[in-house]
Image 1: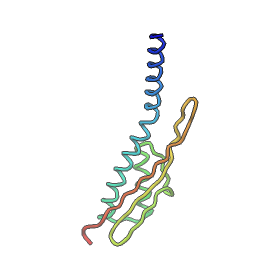
Image 2: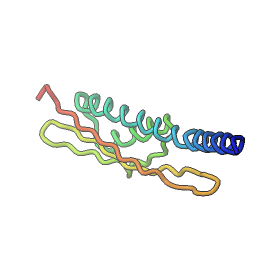
Image 3: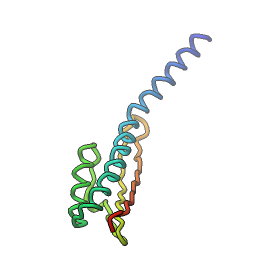
Image 4: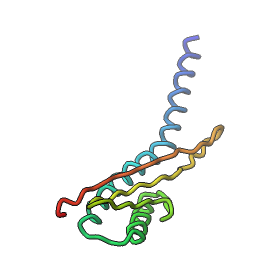
Length: 115
């Protein structure tokens, strides 16, 4: 009986490790994209570009983090000296018995201090 509990415990650890191995890269990429859009909001508040140029730059930089993001998924809004960037995307996680999607939404707003 003790061996059965040990085998079951080891199996639970292996399955948990596998799930973390599959999911963690998506969350890490989301963290990096969130930081990147915050940095880009600061840059584009102080060095203005058109909304389409901002969307294109963000989509290209998101691709560096393995996040396939189309410019249509990015929303850029300007309001009285502030720049807001928001985006939403889905990452498909392929698991042997239960594949699923993770939905991520990121947004940031930066105020221009040089108004």
